[in-house]
Image 1 (cartoon, rainbow, N blue to C red):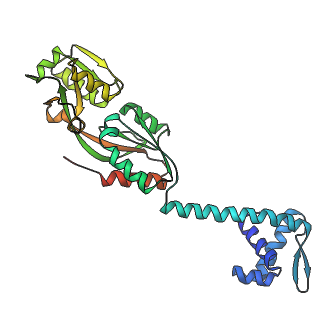
Image 2 (spheres, rainbow, N blue to C red; image 1 turned 60 degrees about the vertical axis):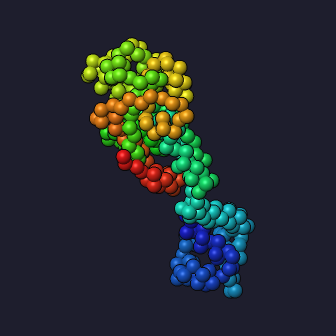
Image 3 (tube, one colour; image 1 turned 180 degrees about the vertical axis):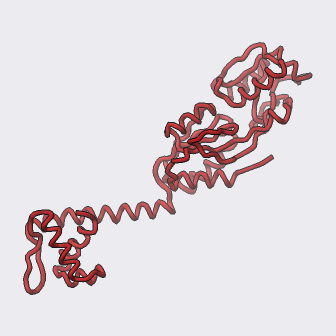
Length: 287
């Protein structure tokens, strides 16, 4: 038994006439008659009484009709829900980002997305780039904004922003060599910005006195302000911050970092995800 069988059965039951049902369905009458007989044979019971004026339901036909009405109604509702979702996305969308991106780039995107698609349950998570990549690969996130390029056979990536990394400190630095005498205040090892800077600094023979790890941007900024050490931050975040930090520029090859939005190549692009990517694309910026 399939949906077509139930549709034909329902129409015949409603019209109590095979000829009228066939006309409504744009079927040949003989095809409707054959499908009803096949359905009765499959179920092993008669569904209709036949008479000269038409047909009427048997007790088994009445039982099937009650279920057919529910099933066909659910089918109509599911089609309507899908069609509505094209215009009005619904469901749950899990998006991740680094803390810097979430703080600087996401507020305007999230605000417009919430306003336009209030029925989407948007769940946001902040993690390091390494963690975000793993969470997308494990399908625990639908997509994520990460720092730097990623080359993985199972991932697609889309350019979002180009960020500029700077060194922030309480007092001006006379040269980059001075970093070897100071503490580096940073996120955990999975932070792309930290890894990039440490690789460059090691090549230049610059080894910070100590590396102190923190969990939030606010904690890092507060400790830099107190003179505890220096930190690597994206310039756009500092420009929006009320603290008067000293900025030291880095060489271009280490200071320019793309922010990419990643998804699994085999992901199902729900309309909620498509609309979020649209918001990302509308905010693409090169410097």
